[in-house]
Length: 120
Length: 112
Image (cartoon, rainbow over the protein chains, first blue to last red):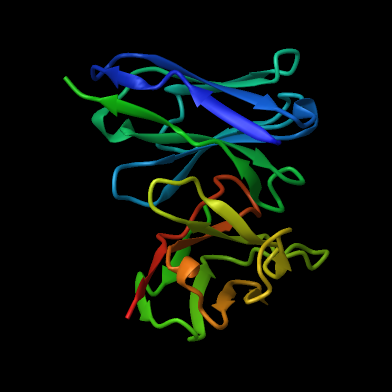
């Protein structure tokens, strides 16, 4: 079964850092672009970041640019999100998601999400 | 950046009804090759979103045919015919024309 499993979420103080991981299985991870999408409590979906299959192209939402870094290790079938200078407004469930046709055909596989809470 | 505006924000309907949700992009999201980069997702409480329709009108595998999408340029619609109990959820559109790949605000479909 095609699967994405996020980990690394938790409670962190404002200004702190956290690294999220996403483990992919049962598909050719190195052939797909990947995304991070988040959802604040009771709010809608917010796209966060995108990385192509070979890491040559990376995009960020303005809200996280300069603070978050997306990366991947195709040898480990893993996607990462390094989050620095965290703010209360970064509190959300973070989803790892697979892009189709370089995202042009949407995001077709999602993990269950990992929860990040930024609070003192 | 492309803004995506979805309407209505909430919708009440009954089993068997036909409903339509609209998504409007702030600029055209149709490519020169006439590909429409608009996708629709369904999300149920506590669950990850699920891709329903991509490229404005292509049904994702396994999605019932009562779901359909249409539109081009800046205006798109998601139609659900013969509503079933499992269709009551929140629906999002997303443009995938260019980054940032913005989502609409969501439409919560509730039972009347």
